[in-house]
Image 1 (tube, rainbow, N blue to C red):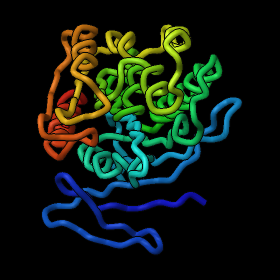
Image 2 (cartoon, rainbow, N blue to C red):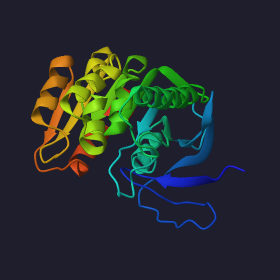
Image 3 (cartoon, rainbow, N blue to C red):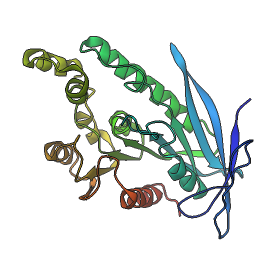
Image 4 (cartoon, rainbow, N blue to C red):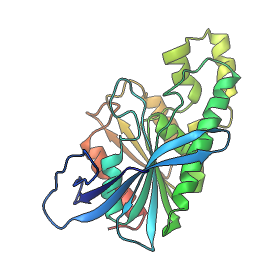
Length: 272
């Protein structure tokens, strides 16, 4: 049986939850009921994807759709599908369905430095695409009003989906797959590093963001993982993108970034 929560949402945060064992904290003002459902998404040749589906409790014929892809930053407690849950609940209260899948590579397996890493990325992409298709299949979702929002590795996968959606938010991700894999896992000699970069030809985020309709890049001024050169490469790849640099934020970004992101997605999807 699927677990579900009925969250009472107002403004930026939640919640009043009726699931067994869950706490309840209801803010003031007029509540908007939102349902958060724990679902399993089938993926051909892979294990099912665990995800949260968030949508208004009442039937709605004209829902926007949002896919949220979480970050990787161990040992953070939010490096999973819960990262964007409060944000998704707020968006759902405005008239959207949101899907928050659990990602697995490189969360549950390390890169090894060869062609199999490309296969792992493409397998994860297939799971992300399955999640997006599940979002589109939700009753009332308008296929022309969709967005993908990703952070860190989640942003990098979001870039590979950007041609399918109306709007993309890319938060503090890298330009290439090989760089972080090599820097934080592999430590390859230079000749091997050059060959490894070629493994991901056609999949690198900086080569795919130009395919997006509308894009919003969010960067952190104190991010030790993303360099100014990476930020510049993305702006060159997508000159029409909205760009925000939060000078005092670290890789996690901050509340002003969340507020700006929610406002931008709300406007892009025609919500209120």
